[in-house]
Image (cartoon, rainbow, N blue to C red; front, side, top):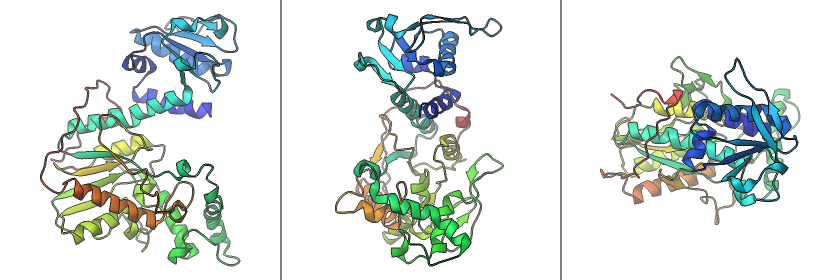
Length: 398
């Protein structure tokens, strides 16, 4: 688990956000970094950040090494790392204690920042706050909302209700390939789909993911009656030829409509509702298999050909940013709905869930007058000097 968190932090470092900057942003003037010998290489990376930044100093300590000095110099670029065993450090001299390990400190817990907490903070900054604020600064007339979507694990501790269905969907492909025995029961049987149709919808998310000549993440086109992928993205049913503005959905599987036919995704349900109410908006499904690949999602976001008053709903791992509007749908499947009737497995939902969410979006947009020409006043975003490679260039339509 520690290694996975380190990889995620390194990803954020590569994007341009460092621990010295984190300390400055959070007014931490005297940081202490505590780790173990097995994570020495990662500690060295942190040490290098503070050596090169020079705006502030940091102290390093280990749980399982005696106080000492390690020569980390490369052609004289870095000096040696002087460190202390945690037992020889007066932690009262420090503002915060960064635990670069899953180990816990029995004392001074109120000062401790645990590795998982640190990683979450960095992810929120790099995958949401910085790029989306930059995006809105370049596109001030676009209405953008971060979204929080339902998570059944938070409702049903342990997730046992979905264990059998998860196994069934994983076995389905193998069963179909062998083509032996009676059909396998699946959570989508109640909708009348065959095993072959269910298998197609399961794998729509991995239908030949690729990067096109312009660097955009797309999928291979597919004309199957259930899947429908055209020009690298999932088709939205009922789209009008004439429209005033567009509503974009950017994110991973929930927005792409995994485990459902193309005409029963959030986007298709919402488009049908708009048409029935004679509202001239066109809904676009810009979702891909982005899970864990947020740079691709942000790159695709910046490539949209936008017009003033276009609306964007973006889902980034249920992250939220204080200075950006949030549409919280985390309770959308609560009573009188039944999570067990909606979730296909521990991560995905069926067409019942997509219809419920589409109704929530429609209600939100109509009740808040988004279909009238009114100005939407966002909080004034703070300036950022950090710019990342996937943010270069403007996404404003000519």
